[in-house]
Image (cartoon, rainbow, N blue to C red; front, side, top):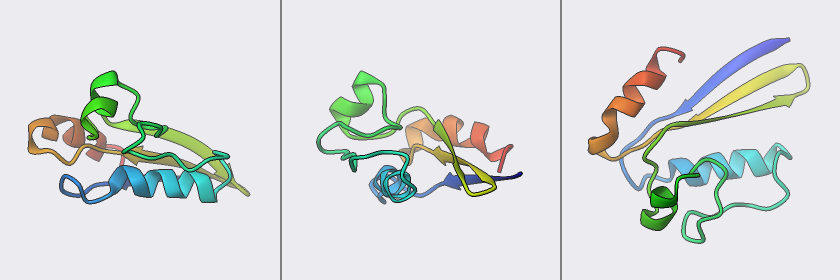
Length: 92
């Protein structure tokens, strides 16, 4: 089995979490497409993240596609949380 670590990094409001949700939905991991505006995403789990509509803490979601395990990492885009992004870079 192969492992792919896929990190999504970009500036604030670029759509990183929305892209993560689309990938999870298209891979069949979720039955419903989550929304940042609705506070129903898989990776933004903190109450403050859902309230503000931004990612504060990096989150990993793992799933399999055929013989490949994908570790999808959603990262913050706001400069105040750059330390969270730096922590993720070591696995990418």
